[in-house]
Length: 216
Image (cartoon, rainbow, N blue to C red; front, side, top):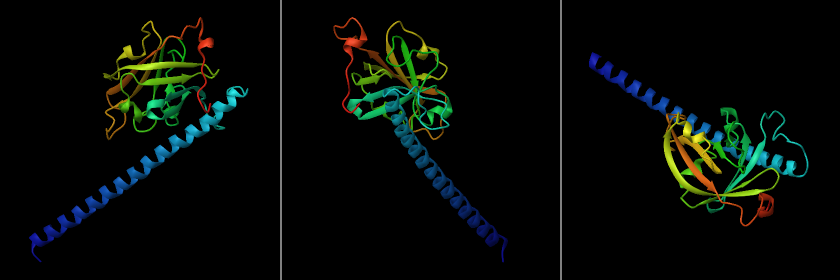
C-alpha cells in the first residue's frame, strides 16, 4: 500500500476524531446551558417562598437550608414581564441563583445608588431589551415600593468605578457582562442600565406613597 494512501487514511481518521470531539463538546455545552437556566429558575421560586415567608413575620428565612444569602428586594419590569428577587451580595456563587446586590451601595428602594449585578445569559438577559422610559418597580422587604424609570444604557470597562459611585440622587444600576452573545463568560466589558427613581407623589414620606402590586 502506498505511503500516499496511508497518509490519506490517517487524515480521514483525524478529521472524524475532530468532528466527534466537537460534537461531544457541543452536546456537553448544551446540557450545561440547560442546567444553568433550570437552576436559575428553580432558585427564584425557592427565593420567592422565602420572601413571602419573611413578609408573614419570619426573620430573614433562608431560601434553602444551606443558603448563605437572603432576598433583599423584589424587582419587576411590567413591560417585559419580568419578576426577580435580588439577593444579598454579588459573589459568583450568589449570582448563580439570582441577581445580587453589590455590597457598599444603597439597598434597592433606598436613597442613593443601588447597584445590582446579574448574569447576561440567565436573570439579566432581559437587560438588552430595556428601552428608555421603561419602568422598574422595586419592592422592599417591608412592602414599600419605589418606581424607577430607565434613563440610559451604556457599555463600560469592568474597571469603571463610576458605576458604583453615589451620584447624589436615587437610582438603580443594573450591571451584566457584555456582549450578551459572548461564548466565554466574564470579559473586559460590562453593560450598564441606569434607572432614576421617581419622587413620591405628593407625599411627605415614602410610606404614604406605598402601593401594592397585584399578587403580592
